[in-house]
Each structure stands twice: as structure tokens, then as C-alpha cells.
Image (cartoon, rainbow, N blue to C red; front, side):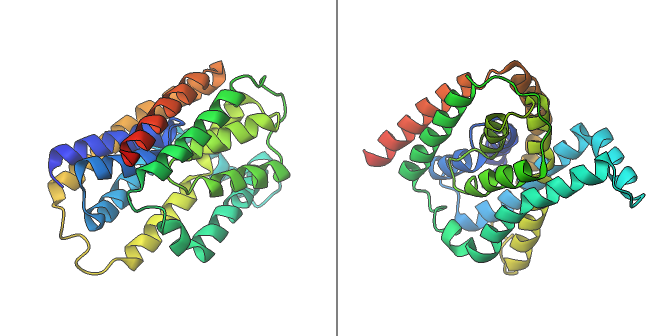
Amino acid sequence: MNWFEALILGIVQGLTEFLPVSSSGHLEIGKVLLQIEARDNLTFSIVVHGATVLSILVVFFNDLKKLVLESLTFRYNESSSYLIKIILSMIPVAIVGLFFKSEVEAFFTGNIVFVGAMLLVTAAFLTISSYVRSGSRKIGYIDAIIIGTAQAFAVLPGISRSGATITTALFLGNKREEAARFSFLMVILPILAANFLDLLGQDSAAGEGIGWFPLLVGFMAAFISGLIACKWMISIVRKGKLLYFGLYCLVVGAIAIITGIF
């Protein structure tokens, strides 16, 4: 992987991690088009996912600071309740990661026909959710588990994590802005945990296929584009403009399927 490929994939990762178009699906398509080796892709994936987590920490710094400080009082309050909901939302994806890791990895083989099909599923959810009126409910404990289950399904390439979690929250009648906020905060620990497990699972030669400069370029590209996309997505959800991303996923999914077949 050279620095230009790292720049392109870093931007793709940063934008699609937050915009409801599936970062994993786009990275799989990009990997096939740019012919990136699997070993390079794993190392690069760890770096750019770390960059997107950092962008979330920057955007929601004040929210996270409040949650941590108020929870450290060890009293049941709004912040400690919110953290409990985040932990509950992590259970489904943790189960998938611990017990079905090899089955999930089998989908990451550059099969863009499958990716395209899952993008069509994402398109359907986004299109339907665009006609759902904003609710007035705050996310509850049961809501957190259901939204977390949606996140677990989003481990498949082509299923948008933010799209799945935000639309599920909207279907449950939650506020639009709260749905976006919870969707972004709930992913921090799962991404960090997945990256940690990937690091433990790498052999000593895993990082030799890509130099430090492409990794740095990819990290910075993912971080900067992630900052932009995260702030943009909050505004998009608030305005209820998910339909446009549904149409985008429909077009890209159809192109991926046609390209994979022919």
C-alpha cells in the first residue's frame, strides 16, 4: 500500500464510519479495486479505526467528560444511567465478536456481490426511516439492547453501523439528535476492544507490508474526514435527511453487484 492509496482509504474510512453508508462495505470495495493485500489491510484497518475513535472523542469531549466525572461519584444519576445503557448496548456485538469471530471474518473476502446486497439492505432501512417522524422518548435500557443488536448485525460488510443503530433508535420513537449521539458514543469501546484483539492476534510480521508514512497519511486522513463526517451526520439526522444516503447506497450496491457478477 502506498501513501496515495492510504489517503484514499483513510478518507473513505473517516467519512463512511459516521455517514450511514457502511465503512466496512466501502473498504472491502476499495480493497478489491486497489488490490490491497489482506495483511496490509488488517494493519491499516486498526490504524484508521483508531483515528475515527479519536475523532469521536474530540467531537463529544464535553459529553464524555461529564459522563465520566458524574459517574465517578458512584451515585445513580443521569450520567451513570447513560453509561449503563452504553454497556448494555455492547453486549450483542461482544457476543458476536467472542463466539462468531471466524464466521464474521468469512464475509471479508472481497465478495463485492455480497457487499452490494447488504448495501441494498442498508438503503431500504434508510429510506423507510426517512419517513419516520422524530419521537420524543429518551433511550431506555431495553432500547439500548435493541439498538445494540442492530449494531451486532452491522458487523457484516455493507450494513451501515450508524445507519442501523440510528434508524433502529428512530423506529423505537427516540429523539433524532439523541439517536445520533448514542450511536456515536456506543461504538467507542467496541472499536477499541476489536482493535486490541486484532493487535494481539497479529503475528510479528503483520506490519511489515506497509510503511510508517502510508499509515500516518491514512491515520490523519481518517481523523480529519471523521471529524467532518461526525459533525455533519448529527446535523443530517436532526434534519431527517437520511433518504439521500439511502439512494446513494442503492446506487453503489447495484453497481457492486453488477461489477461482481460481470
